[in-house]
Image 1 (cartoon, one colour):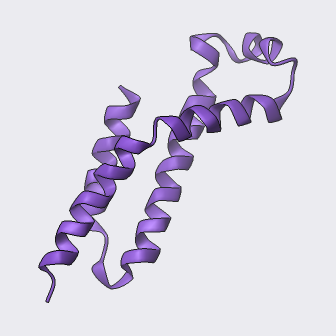
Image 2 (image 1 turned 60 degrees about the vertical axis):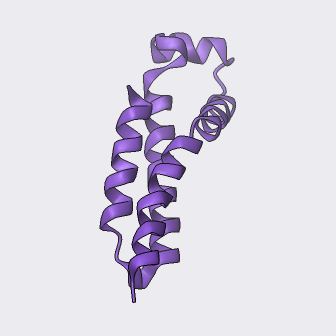
Length: 96
């Protein structure tokens, strides 16, 4: 469900980004979507467990837990990235 919501947000952002700031806007949108998805993964806990149980699994290491979630987000971010780029590239191709 999270992947679908982030993908829909990516399509909307790709459709609304101003073309005069295409590269910087694209990079900002990618960073924003990635951070939102990583934050949601982090807040949900490991496999749906509570945050205190999750910290026990990661030996109370926030760095390891955040690194794990960034890695999971990185692997799942291909579809939202494609969904963000497609409308933006289509709009740039039509611009005079």
